[in-house]
Image 1 (cartoon, one colour):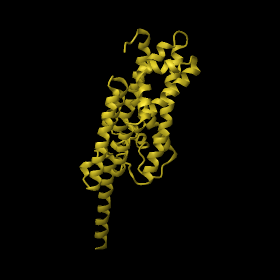
Image 2 (tube, one colour):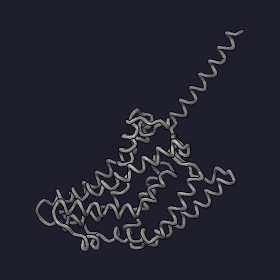
Image 3 (tube, helix red, strand yellow):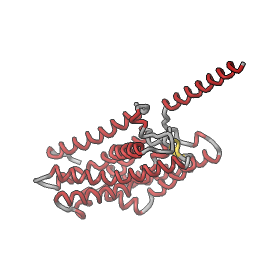
Image 4 (cartoon, helix red, strand yellow):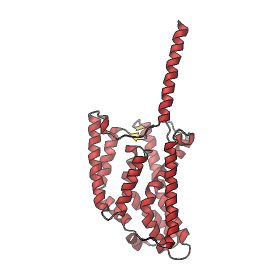
Length: 286
């Protein structure tokens, strides 16, 4: 992909936006004991309204961080094909519509996280689902890689020129409709991979980065379809291994995940305080 001089500001804007989103994610993990960060990881299954808002914003920012890199070729081509006039506005509308789709997906992700938490199949400290459900998610995501829906959506994402040639609409309204259309194809291609965040840890940055690279490679390299199939096979194999770990109670059969050390420390302090209280009660009774 050749970047022209006119496309440079658009590329810089998208890259900076993605970096901003990644910076927020890093901050949430590094300073996860900050009161604001802790609102995105409620420990109690009884969420407050502020928790729903915070978790939604966290998911929306994460989706933008993960999906913007793979959308760059489409955004740049839209900018090029828009011609003169309100080019920046139309491209911004296209980008905004694309992110709207992932914001809607974030609502679904928040609902899954909330109900999984209340059903006691989600660890609130690591934000990972149980080993059994992890195996199910991995196998389903791996199997989805071989479906016709995945193939259709992936081909639409891999060919920006083909996408615009068959769907081009001018103006801001047309840009918004095309942005929604591209977002839906992208969602259809990647929704199963995004749900795997519950397997490796929603705030496990290594896992988030690995999924981001996988999505980017699928959409941009010439052998994207072959890579998609390889990913599918690996997910199915790892899902079976996770099932093995579940049925044999082998903890090595599950994926390592991030935990909140500050919560562990608080728990240790509470245990110490409880022990000290018991000792004091025993001394007073004597």
